[in-house]
Image (cartoon, rainbow, N blue to C red):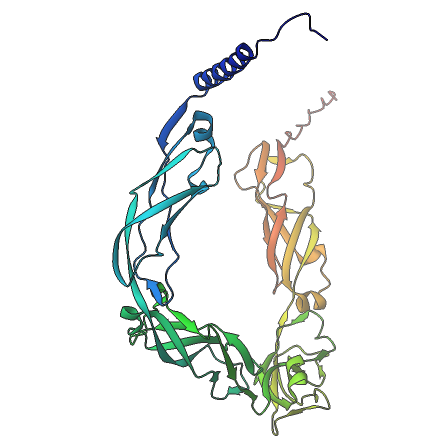
Length: 419
């Protein structure tokens, strides 16, 4: 079947190639390729070191220059790159001018150039040296316990590293904390290598074999004693108007003896009941102690003396007292009698218990000396029963109104008729 038109294959291929070329030209115009140095640097890893050799000096980090489209450069970060120095052909001693290869994790990065492009590395033969293991115990075991001599398994280990650095190693130290422990220790610990002065050689990249040791520290329970507080037990109440002060116990602690679990649970020993009923003065008593439990024993001969102190309770009472007016001038008189004044007193409760306070037990005086007719605010003066103290007076000033005494009328004489 003949087609109504003819196909020119050569022209078609040319058209496709031209379209592809125009696409990449347009793409390059909108997203041109660029070359830039990234901020920061990348550490250099030494790889493929021959067996029996070890790196002595670590190559310095390198700067990275990349070539890629602008949108790729904008998104890549310095941590997207890995720098490696291949030591496959390096030998013991100084190896200079080894090529640094940089690998990008972003496939759109077209070219990566390290700065500098090469580095030097020094390799040394690996040397091994046996070292003793020293156990350093940190802290103290709990009270009532003692520790035995610690042991390490194995007691010696082998350290390996650069031949020029292994000779500085003096011993392998294991730090074992024992502060407050009550049971034996049997654990695995990682030692650290130190020189003859105790300086840590961690920065020398020395490797210990085995990398860890088993340390055993025996912890033994001693004779089991414990000091605990004495707690006084009180019954009754002091006399009326008195309050009980904190009791003084001498000695304040006693020693218990018994098994460890019961000793740990015991925090005090109570006294037998101390009756304080009706006391109003300081009292000193010798008081026996209660046996704390069937598994705990008091040290023989332990007794306590208890001092019981009381103090008076301060109370308050308010009484309404009519005031008395003194020094009133003869030419004035009261318009009305002043209202009673509230007098609040304080004192020891026992004093109130023996007094039946009434208004007649107090005297409130208003001194009107030199006051003429008018209204006056007079400060009341209060006289109290013995043993009491004035707390307050309300009101603290009493208004008194005075007026002049009206004149006495003079009688008019009556006329006497003539006889």
